[in-house]
Length: 465
Image (cartoon, rainbow, N blue to C red):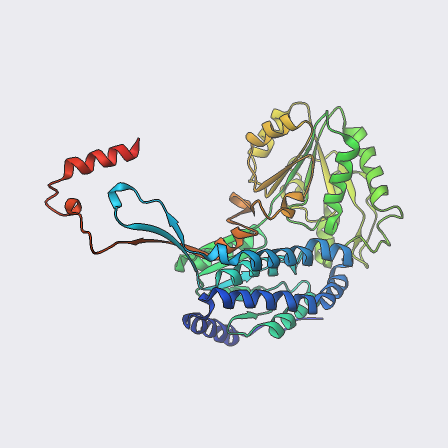
């Protein structure tokens, strides 16, 4: 199926409707927001089967994987927001220094306003709806833009949102890059975008004239280092799982392998065994292995196979958009497969003798969204301390996204800002500083001609100690 592009006139209408609705102050009421979160949860449960069926149709994503990596995470975020929105929204009293006495100091968290949320195709439910939880909790309105590359999912998402919310509050627009361009032409109080670095640059450039704050969750080449002292069986299993999840079409998938030269051959064999453990009958006819999203993505991935020697996997079927998990050895650091985010089940292999080589290699390239190290914990912390990335795992992959108590986000080319749990609420909020001063006391020290300056100077210096 093909989605019809939302017209420029319709986009203009929605932007104006949402600005007018936000101006009424309705969304500022915390009780009302909580009711909307409950409606969100109820609606998601109602539309769960159509959404998981659509994920199967567009991506060959099983119900189990769809629930674990898409809907389950959204349910968790909604539930936590319902429980904690009162505390998150509460006015916070802060300490006041003597120089500001007898005033009282506060932080008031207020909604930013009208927002735009743009999501990609790889986790089309989670990456559209998880930010929406923070948006609703904070008291904003939202225009949602799902991906045209998963048209069945995007249409069901549109029906779900229309069935659950009024369009002047939350609405969906559909379409291709032309629609993106039209959306970016309008002014928002926040743009929350998950996608490629190139799309992030386009959005930033378009919104720069408005100085719009942005949360960008992008991507990059996330390294996966396996040191000589790693538990190869565990490492291979966790790495294979992380790469096979969504068929490698994950922004935090381990992108390339950096193997210590002493364990390279042993790791390759352990990886093959791990695939047998995960898929006893192989991936070709498995209902637990996601397929490639579209023909052009398949062709791009197939082109990478010429950049090295296939030492595991390599089979594929373009007609069914299936590609076997593949290890690629003898890869040049300058090959296309090492220059571009792979976003598929291909694993190029590099080797190293000393961890310093890995650190220099990673630091010489764009900052990745994720970083994975397998080996001793002490060495893992050392490598993390000498590199940077959006997030990281020691002796694991992917799992840092599963804990909402820690931030998820990129750095540099891999993004800006973070979210999940209270950070999602804060992403859509402005923390407003407020000083409340009494009128029954009016100390003279701040007024000209500063007769008490000596005292004030001592107080300021004392506060600096």
